[in-house]
Image (spheres, rainbow, N blue to C red):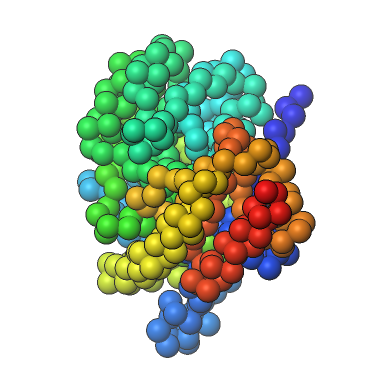
Length: 371
């Protein structure tokens, strides 16, 4: 019998994110509205048929996504309901009892939980903050992989640290993986949300057994559309489509339509520019907040994404801190425990500035009470 392993972070957020005064658990920027995407073209939108669309995504949408990945075609792309489904169907296709997976930590823990649920073997390799700005331990990776390794899972840009990998690190990971013949699953959902505007290098095209999962939730500020995608070989994309038949079957017709608009080059550039503008404005707010209380807080500033992984110097467990913040201050953050790292808090800095400032003030209030 398969016993589902609770996905702690998603249970935490799903339960409370819409019930608190200040939600600083979100990992993307504050969302866009439908009328900001339509530009006045309401008749075409309202005239969309609400039947079953193409279940792996319309040809137009898959071609548009493929254009992001040099050399890709529509056949390399599978459209999913969010990047979470992209991760799920990918892992489901590889998972079996006793299989071996190597996973970067910290990471979005969905993949970790799925491997544990299906009673496969997890071998971690870690990112290190001190002196390295959350760079992966390549020596640990080389030690972890073996001929039994089926897949190596990475997250670039990283959740929760906001770190990005450089080309040489990506090349090293690919070379290490190639030696044992495993696949690489690269979660790249934060690509496009780089503060300096320089797009994080993709694993796409670096190795012939690469799966890139991404979507519109984070860098684009459109989690409500529930549009994700998988970019991989045509053979694997076709195989994963058959797994998709057992999950959500296909994306919403309206979401597919809006995604086609969003990913047109001009609109895409505008939306990603908006995201970077929000992050560039708000990260200094978080830096100033940390600097005001260096005795209790420190962090390595993220290079991408709307998340700050803040280390704290208080004698309290991270889950206990987050619970008290929730109950006493109606403010939600993600405890480091949810990434297997006590002593940290993941704080989303993508909401409007005044909302962010008010949420940080609630954290200060709790810290003062703990002192």
